[in-house]
Amino acid sequence: MEILIKFFEVNAFGSMTWGNLAMILTGSFFVYLAIKKDYEPLLLVPIGFGMIVGNIPFASGMNLGVYEEGSVLSILYQGVSQGWYPPLIFLGLGAMTDFSAMLSSPKLILLGAAAQVGIFITLMGSLLLGFDLPEAAAIGIIGGADGPTAIFLSSMMAPHLLGAIAVAAYSYMALVPVIQPPIIKLLTTHKERRIHMAPSKPVSKRARMLFPVIAFIVTAMIAPGSIPLLGMLFFGNLLKESGVTERLAKTARTAFIDIITILLGFSVGTSTYAARFLTLDSLKIFLMGAFSFAIATACGVFFAKFMNLVCKEKINPIIGAAGVSAVPDSARVCQMVGAQEDPQNYLIMHAMAPNVAGVIGSAVAAGVLLASLGHLI
Image (tube, rainbow, N blue to C red; front, side, top):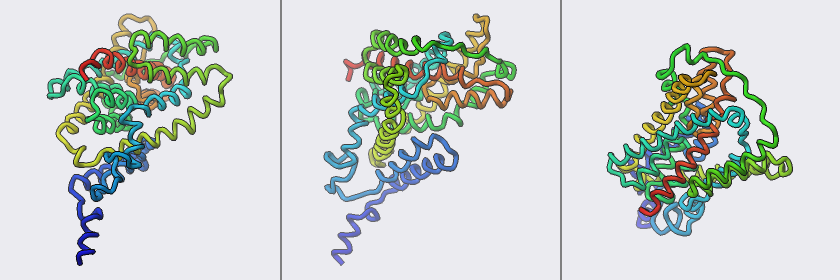
């Protein structure tokens, strides 16, 4: 009987809590959304299954958990906690990103910048909820709908909130098709949603090759804190556009980024152990994340409407929603909403301009916050 009692004490059944069960069900729900609803499966499947793995209880001292130094899960999680997964993700992202739409119509960059206003509004809201300035800055980045950037900044400014911020950021990225359409339709008229935009102008190969070099120098000078992210982003893009490193570019945008995505998503999921994750601060972060994402989307749409007051060539305000950096899901949502109003209206290439500008904008915003508030850490 003593052996049986000891076995019961060390296995999961003896130490399972309601919190663990709730997180396991949440992880299972994420996997369901990914498989059944096709909501960003490349993110939600690793994160969801990681939640299940991370919430199976075990006896202390077994050196298994993500928070036990030296364990396998702890070693994998170092890529999140020390912030080196995000730059590697940006390398692959750069190798698969085409900046031609943005270079063809530079004024659309402003939409990507406008959407970043949500970051700073959320920062102020987080301060009102009782978070200190570095914590509020890390939470605010969720509004950019950029998971890697949120992880990068929170690993430096609020590591104790990293799990909640990472899960919130990736959850809202996955729910872009659910969150953005109602906001777009609420803020635009039927006539505005039917605006047709002129086809994008072709961009020369020389311009595409020069852009990553020049853009990195300019953005790095403005926000040195963003150098790890933007350096890898533009390096990956140079691999793609140079024409002489296609083999490296192909590796970066396929196998390499897939491996890092698996490790990042699974590691983030395992960090959600109920005893550490289910707190009042986590609930506040999720609420502020939803608020920030909605504000960022609205700011992009409103700025597009403002531009129509001063620009001769009208902009379909739908594409303002793509100013958040959930690439390419936000651009796809813009195409979907536009096609519902007019099946002959093709907005996706126009939406990609603010979408990729949003990636740069959120990284620059993170760099500015890191440089401005780093002394408070």
